[in-house]
Amino acid sequence: MTLNVVETITKLQEEGLKTLKQTQDASLAALGDFRKFAGELSEKPGTLPTLENVPTPAQLVELSFGFASKFLEARKAYTLKVAELIAEGQKQAEAAVKSTVAQVNATVGQSKAAK
Image (cartoon, rainbow, N blue to C red):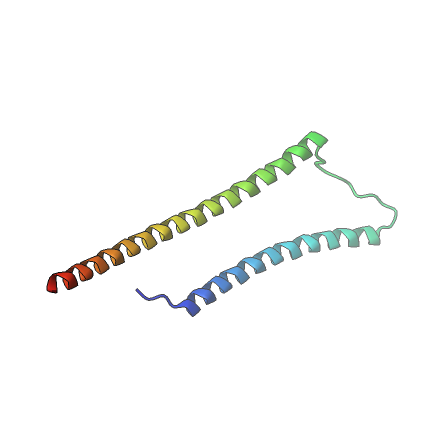
């Protein structure tokens, strides 16, 4: 088995940059909406915006904790996948060590028998 380290690093970097760009694009879109809102306020000074669907304090708490729960679930799912990868790597490493030890023991046994 061969692992091209440069290729793997490049792929990880590309995926990281892609994710970063998506996050930045979402942030820029939100800032653009805020800028548009601020622009409307400056065009009509002294007017107050009409607020729609303003959450109650209890709804605001529910929205906040709902987001936190989703965020933690996403982190948990990610961390479990990382743990699975580590466990699989550990199993592979253990199998490789056992195989190597068996080969060494067989070679040593053959050397002793030849003497």
